[in-house]
Amino acid sequence: MEAVWNELKKIENEAELILSEASLRAEKILKVATKEGERIVANSEIYASEEAQKVWESTVDEANRKRESILKTNDEAIEELKKLAERRMGVAVKAVLDEVRGKRVS
Image 1 (cartoon, helix red, strand yellow):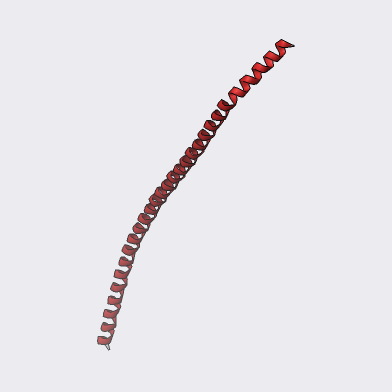
Image 2 (cartoon, rainbow, N blue to C red; image 1 turned 90 degrees about the horizontal axis):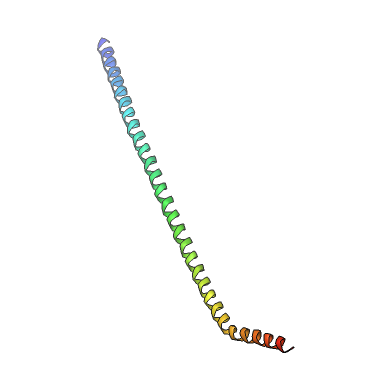
């Protein structure tokens, strides 16, 4: 009976040792997991910041392209208006001269 009792005590001690080792390992695993989680969060913040910067740069580039397109269209319209004004200048000068002559005659 004492042999059985001693064997049970030995098994109980081994179980406590296994439980203690498991607890220590669990703490170590938890620490590693926590550090890895913090690293992942930090990396995701960096990644999010980089992605936000890319979106910002893309938006600025698109706005610049649109601005350049609008400026080009405006420049073309200005040139057309200048040409139209030059073509109509002769008619306008003649009309003014005719008006001045007409008033002097009267």
